[in-house]
Picture 1 (cartoon, one colour):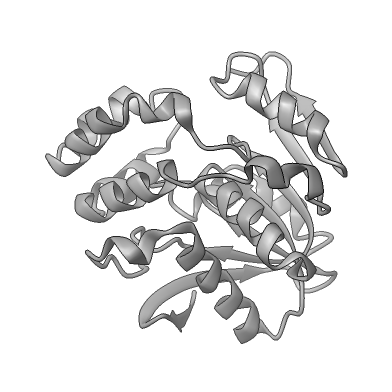
Picture 2 (cartoon, one colour; picture 1 turned 90 degrees about the vertical axis):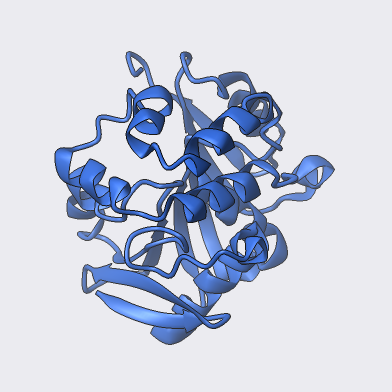
Length: 233
């Protein structure tokens, strides 16, 4: 595992694969970077790509500052760019899940030449209005420090391994709360979606709360496509 200092914060990342173009894997909120390996993504993708997995700020071995401004999507883009600079990578394919997809969407708007193509899972390029309704309940539960209850209530279907759950429970609950709040407050691409030129692939399934938004975004994106995964819950 390697480290880069970005905006005075330590960001940990890990590499895999030794051939092909770069692909950056950005984890969702709270989920450990190791989930990319545990889920079989690394084994499949490293055959064709040089992979770089980022441990988002506030999670795992990356720093967990208490400054809310450090957790904005724009700040997280800076972390990605600094990692790419460290690797001397001019561009990357970008695979983001949840929070990671939000970073990818915003980065492809602000730095379109740095992302060759974007894959989004568990997210969509609009503000999370349906999630905002439950924001206070989520934030209060995280700030209480009861991470076990939080996982049981909000991540019961994530199929977390015992090791992943252990890593999450060892994390800083205040940092988790700040990261979640910034993620939900992200404004999305809005009307800029029509001019979004990055080739984008969105995965969704019908039982997902964002299903209709993901399908709408896939239709509106000029170079976008969405795939509905059957029999997935």
